Structure formats: structure tokens, C-alpha cells
Length: 332
Image (cartoon, rainbow, N blue to C red; front, side):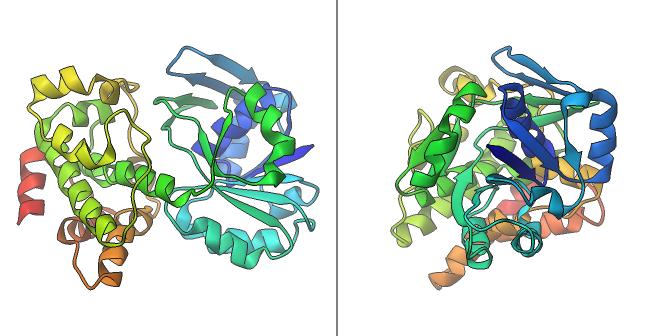
């Protein structure tokens, strides 16, 4: 089988690298800058459990143009959500009929967008629940727990063993939407972390920042209830109770929610990475989805709307927010 990873940045290099280290034939497609780094250093892949794998530069195939996917049987799309439409158009011009395309992206609607533009291919919606840290020189680290979540589909049967050998088994769901919303509820912390300008573990260790996260979550949960969407259970704590846990005093949070702090000490949100690199963020596809849900119900989502505004401002001019200041901003 031939596998291609389209948009091979942090998530793409990690997932594709694990597949390659497990013996699968993988072609990576991404930016010339990443291609140059991997040509010099190869891939090093580690995780929070102590795994350490590598793929040498000579064994890597990293390309920078869409036509590299022409012979792929399976394509993993890992581009940022804002680039999905462009990626779909590029892939539509080169993929062979019948190829299987899996969207491993943040947000809710990327699978639908790919499916609408790739009529001759089989498109499956998926989700990567864990955080990947780019430590530089081709080293990508999985900093949090989680398996690969995908919509149940018969077309995935041929590839299940490859993911098992990679140590990333596919967890299939008959209905992926509740799983996507659960991941999005967790990703509502991305702008809080980006605005804090500190690592995730440090941010989540401070009650003021957690209260900001809880406010965004509680608002989204109220709207989901109004839309009759029940988020999937992906944590030990029910999603509906998570805002209350986040609001606990620090000493109680450390005791009762220790797994949430079991994060690589250097891990930050992908939104922080985007701001640091001067790239557009995915804010419209995370907190912006909550705002759109509110509009569809004839309601408002002031906390998430304000986070959208603050990140858009940060895309132009950075500011490191203290937890208390950010909380006041959201409460106001």
C-alpha cells in the first residue's frame, strides 16, 4: 500500500513518521522548509510514554508538490483548516479514483468540505486528539495521550494493521460528530494558551487561566444542549462536568485532575505555534464554530466571540496576558 501525508507539519510528520517507522510506505507532502530540515536530520519521534523511534533522511520521501500523491492509496490530510478548500482542489486534480482520504484536522466541517470536492474518492472524517510538539531538527514529540479517532468505514480495513504496527491504532466511531465536538471543547483552550504565552502545563496550573477555559467551555456546552448534540465521553471526567473541575482551586485541581497536567513541560497549543511563526490561526474553526452554532440557534456566544477577537488582534500584535487580566476581559 502507498500512503501520503498531505500537509506534513507537526501532526502530519508525527503520524506519518510513526507509520513509516512501522514499515509502511509513506510519502510526505509539505513546505520546502520542512523538507530541508528532514533532508538533513531525518525524523525522530518520541512520546510521553517513553517511545523513541526514527526514520533516517535517506529513507524519507518528502515532496513539496501535490502530484506526489498521484499513486497514493491512502491520503492523510493534515493541513490547517483554512487551507482545506485549497488542498481539496489540489488533490482533486491528481488523486486516482477510489483513493481513501482521511481528514485528520481540527474543527468540525473539514471532512464535509473534502467530500464535496473529492467525488471520485472515499473521504473519511477523523481526528487527532493528542498534542504534538515540534522540538526542532526533525524531532516531533507526542505530549499528551490519545488514539486516532475516525468515522467507521469499510475502506479503512486494509490499513488498520499499518496503524497498529505504528502504535497508533484507529478508534472507529459510528458517529464522529460528538467526538469532534468533544475535541473542539478541549481545543477551546488553544486561544487561552496562545494568549498566555506560557507552556500548557503552566497555564493549566493557574486557576485564572482555567476559569477562562471553563467559561468558553460552559458557553459551548449550553449551546450544544440547545442543538441537541451530546459530546462524546473522551475523558475520565464527563464533558458536562469539566468546567466545574477547571474552576476548582489549584490544590484541588492538582489532586482531582492530575492527568490533565500530565503534559510535556514544553508543550504549547498549535495556536501559539501559529502566532509565533506569523501564520494565520485556526481560531475561526475552533471558537468560531461555537459562535456559528450560537448564530444558528438565534443566540450569542460572547466569551468565544471575544476570544476570536483577541486572537485576531494577536495575529497582528502579540501581547502576553496575565490570567486575571484575561478573565476580566472575558467576563466583561
